[in-house]
Image 1: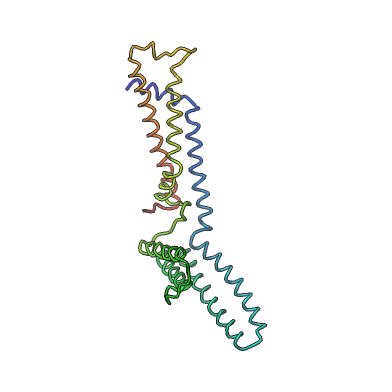
Image 2: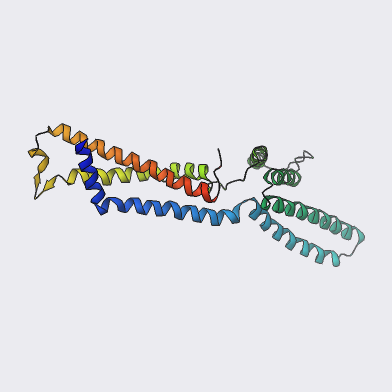
Length: 247
């Protein structure tokens, strides 16, 4: 135990050992900020706002075309399209309002209705490829589950809420971080024993294998401890500022 304490003091005093930790913590916070900013634009409300802007632009073009219609049939077709576009925009605006007011479940239900209307799920007239059909039903399944849970959605690969953000960090960043910390720690504890090209561990009364095992054990303990600490650093800010969220 005394030997491990000595290693820890040396690790603590070595500024080079803390550099990758500070860099990684800053990277975690930077990813959280970036995900929060981009996620606000790419969440359900943000995407519906983009579609509303596009549909309104198309509605304007349709109304201009209707003004130049030459026959009653053309005018009737334009009026029908105009009515459908306005009804869709109204539903999309309803999704935005409900989502922004944190009425998650109701927003998802309206969104499911929009998807089914758009792709002919209600009528059974789905003229789409098998891949597109799978994508459509996958979206419906996701929004259905979210409606049941009545929770805010997270953009895939850009999670911001506590549990999901931690999961993304664990899968993308933390394995690399663990290896980096382990390398820095082992490098410190093994190179520290040399002084003027002399291996001081050979001068100690302990056996060489025992000393080496102690150094390896210390490296693993430090790496695991810092791994857990950084997990908390990733989880707590995301949970505090955005929300906890369960899988």
